[in-house]
Length: 370
Image (tube, rainbow, N blue to C red):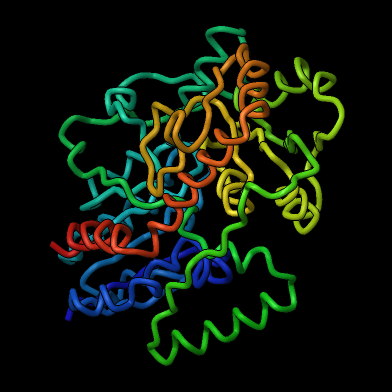
């Protein structure tokens, strides 16, 4: 039996544990049992009492005062390593570009929700820590108040990088329920897991796109982002297109969550823009609600489940938004195109819960234990 202890931040022990990012451990309970893995979740790490064989560490546990992981936390990793324990680092940061490579000398694997396809990108200096923030700095001379610092990737550690899974593994049907019902289901999940029952791989209930939808467009974006180069894309959208979209559209700032889901279920197209990272809940929520999405080009990103396949699951927009009007007109004009985009993206999300997902997670957990 291989004992794995997963150390997560306190905020991840609620919804994210049983129905969110970490739900894979429960969803793939039979797979882990077959591999001889016994796991438990903790919200703290005692380096003086290390009983597990493998420690999976969420990066959110390790608070930092600067752009880098604090030295005292690196020393903790060094102690764990000295005890011949395997360390698996889960980088939970939002962007493919915002990395924590300073931990690489101490960990056995470095798992992240998304990476740049070209690993050489991590060996360059990026303004703002992201390829798109660097782009806005170079093209529009947008500058941040504080320079973002990052550790470049050392060639000798590149083999430690492993693509994990993104927020698309969430049980979104639970998110869309009202708060009281969600709480009841959460309590049931706690009892199931404590009795060592795996959570059922319930198929996601998808809405069909080919029903009447009263809104052509939904585009709600908050701009409460402190870094100028990261916020700029949303400001550029407001500047160029706030007054462009007329008629049956829902464009503006963030709205209450239940109203937002209802709007998605009655909209043809979602425009999603980058925030702190490239991937957002919006694209998955729209897909499940039967609404196709268009967004800035994601062809430089690798992630899974991958609903970011150009011309197959979404239509890409240039980062300067210069072709947004043409892309929007195209996707509104052709209903068959929208339906195909939605269906293909829904298949990608559903793959988490079928044989494709089983084999994907089998490969990951075999890498972790071997």
